[in-house]
Length: 153
Length: 440
Image 1 (cartoon, rainbow over the protein chains, first blue to last red):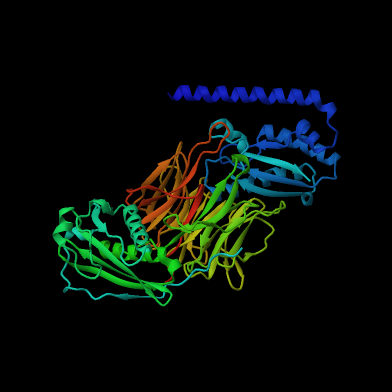
Image 2: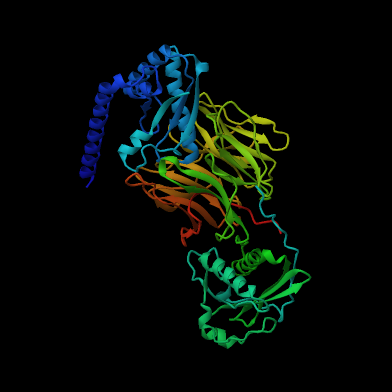
């Protein structure tokens, strides 16, 4: 039973990995249609979010790559104010998750600041587990929900 | 937002007992210290004198039945149909249907108010066990019924009742990725539910002041500024920000005397616990660690605060003195511990526990001993105590599937882990906060 579950989870993750790489390819192919320096450009060609392990707030290797791209882009297009929104999966209590989301948003902020983005350009907000994306109650959904999303204004 | 004023109960008076007090035998009393007992069979006759009398009797039946300690005998099986509210019932007719107690009552007019008399008869002994008279505005008839149910509960169990109370909660609606979360308040039995916030922004974690006149909760702003703690008058709807800090403030809770609010404030990813004086708004920092310190709750005497912290590597429960300092860990079981709430009696701390695949609601003594789990599930969270410290409410969330949020419901359970029942709410509901008894 356990083994089957683990296989199922792995299969899900493979599907998701396949999806995201497909998306990146389409994004790259379509990048000519997006105005460079637009929010759509940031989301499609840079990536607006980084993901975290369960109950953790350290930036993973995949997250560092995304944040490096974000920093380069944000240094080029300096007209945007930045809000980093921290989120959690549903497997924690509401109040603790508010604090954990804040910690994740702050970790992403500190990384961008270390790459040369002025701290006063970046504010943070935590949504805890109040705004899931995607909505779901499996490992794959939870992994996508443990996130910090860089939003531009 | 104008809300109906909370009206007062004008007065209660004891009705003289017909016979000299005789120590009641077991049937109409419950020894709450025993591990198991049978629910007390009780017959509640429709109150005479006014149409509202039947409604009052229904509310009393519902309260007592829902406690799990009583079994309300269906009125259809009553043999004596014409019970005089002021004379003893025909005891053999009630013994025959297995009743241990009979409740009768009378509704009368008293200069624009209603006057309700009730008597509880001990069928086993054959005497009057309780009798009270209340006067109030007619619109308050449900409160009168809850007060009567509390009096019966107290007479039979020896403990204070909890029926004349309210529940604040988060009313949830809409799709899972854009859920509307509004603070709402209802009577303990689900009646008179009404919204306290308008739903334009997310509002969560409501907590009552000891007088029930105010609630504190956390709400998001309409811009991207951090969510903060608000203090709101329940009757007038007037709300104010409880301190304007650069970071998020959250997880508020009143002190037992209502003069202070304890909460968490975040700064640079660090969340610490602070205490604010409600009148003067003076702020005092109680913890200072790089960890997440949150979900603080005062002890019943206000001398200590229990909270959860991940300072030791995982989320655990700690107790400190109310002024800060003397912090010590009290949870040592397997898993993570969260949302500690001190019983109004002081004997237990209830908590949410997170283990590998499940969530649970449990209790432990203030020193961390005697841990006992009461309920478990995919996601159960946020215990809150009824004012008598014998019953808890919490919420259950079902797994989401196919992009749809699972249902979220409020539940109550006895401190022994028995009698779990879903509490009626108008829609999905989470984060219950049980009020103290409503001041009479």
